[in-house]
Amino acid sequence: MEPRLVILSRGPELYSTKRMFEEAEAAGWSVQILDPLKLTTVVDNNGVKVFNKGWPVDCDAVIPRIGNSITGRGVPIVKAFERMGVIVLNEGDGISSSRDKLMACQMMNERGIPVPITANVGTWQDTRRAISRVGGTPCVVKVTEGTHGSGVFLAHTEQQARQLVYQMLERNMRPLVQEYIEESHGQDVRAFVVGGKVVAAMRRKARGGEFRSNFHLGAKVEKLEIPDKHSEIACKAAETMGLDIAGVDLLESSRGALVLEVNSSPGLEGIEAASGVNVASKIIQHLNRIWEQKMAPDNSSEVPTEQEVNDEGTSEAY
Image (cartoon, rainbow, N blue to C red; front, side, top):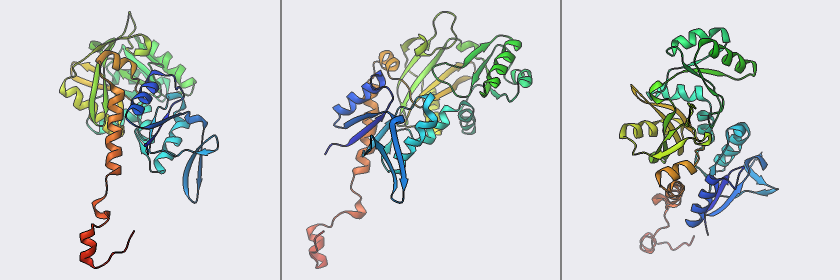
């Protein structure tokens, strides 16, 4: 019987979802793509069950593609599958931690992972002190939860930074003021980590005067032979977040590589195009290794051989 994989995605037509579907099917998995927001979770005396259109979702593994906008609703679904005992590549806690930029920054700092100097601002009146702590202007002002470069601004003056912080607080957002790395203006390094190894890397370069180098904002991408130190930092960052699959964004500064962000649902289109690596296949290969380990017989519970049965003087069948 084929092992069963569920890909949690709101966009079955998206490049990343399609690529993982194709590679998983080619590797012998029976694959379903399910919208996490259309699933129902039931908790009773028998444990946790997930249902789709009234039918129980029975599977052996789950790959969540939980977008930033549905983190609050998507993560409980992921955690339900965890409690069902299936393989989950990127567990709920890892997704939640990586989505909160302040929490992620604190967790990485505790592990000795280099990050840009970052200040969480609780009131707009404290903006001046925050700017001073991160090295002055220009500085980056961003919300703690955002993706694809949304909610990230470069403030050239203190007044501009104060206005951005004020506007974010007025909208009940949590603003961060972050050190601006001038030598990395408009470019960064994306390291794609799968199972504790960097399987592909690329350099992203913003176009024109844009300082954000996100692929979705039109940045150019190019293949990169990632230095060992960068790779070591990226793998440690993914491990700290508790992620099997991660896109780790690095800024190259005068004091070495700094982790800007750890993405728990990294896109495959840009990295596959730039690196020439079949990243989707790498993900499924990692899944296969976990599946094979799970299905490997436990030596302590092996059925005894015929000789062992005869030696013990019993022939009781199981």
